[in-house]
Length: 91
Image (cartoon, rainbow, N blue to C red; front, top):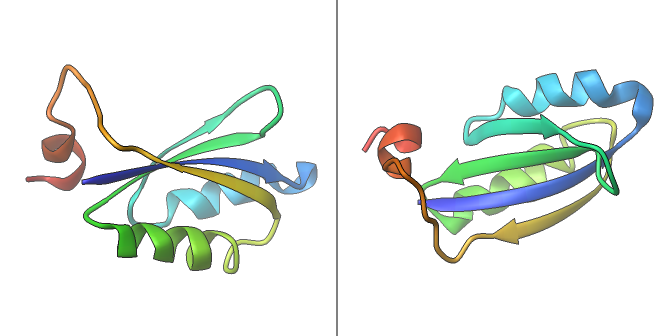
């Protein structure tokens, strides 16, 4: 499983619409509205980097109006009290 953490700046008037559109994308597991430098934190959990790239480079930045800027982090390792692949990918 590949997990991407995407920090997103959004046009203020579009924030609710952007959240709804993000949640429609397969692979987006969570969207957090946050305070600070960014408006949203988007958690993406997919099988491979190709799927992650498609979501970030196409579905988010080209298909969703209102996103101004993104900053993406790709996890190298994950540590959790639950089996994340089983929870998110049904494996």
